[in-house]
Length: 253
View 1 (tube, rainbow, N blue to C red):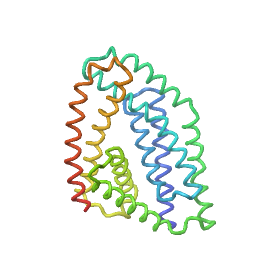
View 2 (cartoon, one colour):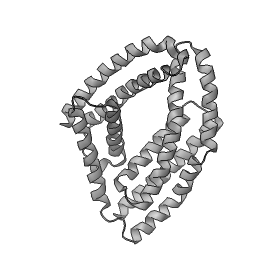
View 3 (cartoon, rainbow, N blue to C red):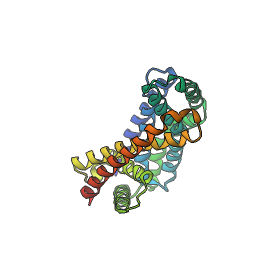
View 4 (spheres, one colour):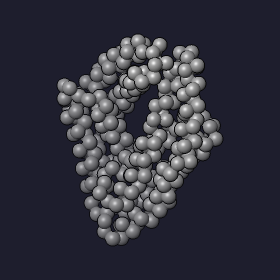
C-alpha cells in the first residue's frame, strides 16, 4: 500500500503543477488550448480520487476539483462554438461571444474555485500521510479495483440498453477511459478496447457539440443561419457514434 500511496501522491503533485501551468497560460492568453488542458487535468484528478469516495481527505479535493469543472464547462462550450462560427466565416456572430468568453476567463481566474483547489492541493499530500497513519487507507487496492469494475459494468449495461442515453454513455466512457489511464494495473483493457473508448468519446463529443449548439440556437436567434447544417451534422454524428458504440459493446462483452 505504501508504494501505491507514494505513486498516488506523486501523480497528484504532477497534476497540480500542470494545473498551475494551465492557469498561467490562460491568464497570459498564450494559446487556445489552455482551458481545455486545464479541464483535462481536472478530469484526471477526479478520476484518481473516484475510488476513494467517502474518505474525507479525498472528498474535499474531489469537491474542489468538481467546482472548477462546473465553472469552466460553459466556457469550454463557448470556446468550441466560437471556433465553429469562425470556421464558417461568421466572425460577426463570434465577436460578441468572444467578449463574453474573455470576461468568463477573467471571472474564472479571479473567482474562488481555483484558489480553493490549489489550497487543498497544497495540503493534500500531508493529509493523505496522516490518513495512512490513522489506518484510514486500508484496502486501497481493493477500492480501486472495485470502482473500475463498477464503472465497466455500468457502461456495459448502458450500451446494452436499446434506449441508451448518449449523454450518460459519454460520461461513463470518460470515466472508464480515464480510470484505466490513471490506474492501468487495476483493469485489463487491451489496446484495441482503449482505442475504441477513445473513438467513442470523440464521436459522442462531436454529437454533444451539435446538440448543445442547437439548444443554444433555440435561445439565441442570431445562430439560426447554422441550424439546418447542425441538424444534418447531428444526425450524421449520431450514426457514426452508434457504429462505434456497437463495436465497443462487442469488445467489452
